[in-house]
Image (spheres, one colour):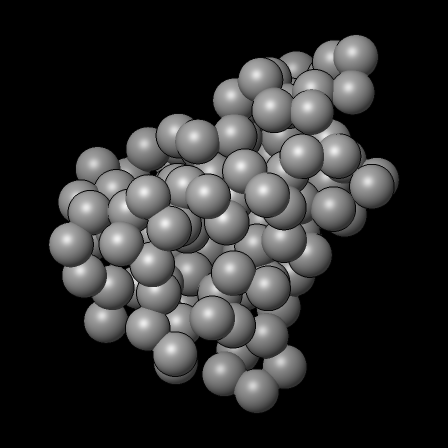
Length: 116
């Protein structure tokens, strides 16, 4: 179960939904064992993320990290997405060992959306 500042991000639920704009790209990922699923709608321009919206089903860590993407990845260049997400996770108290699958899944969805 997510704790601390990540729990607060989850409770805010920033970015739920999808963009309906021409600059939006979709990225999806699923965890093959637990069945968690995430879809990211990412607005992009000039190699940068302009905004992230999400839809997810699964554990609280998956939903918390999807909401964290919506808050923390605005104006981040594609080549810095991994580092920016990991820094945001660390700044929010990190993940428990059993929650790391959510990070990997979100990164797969991000990369699928931006093509990087």
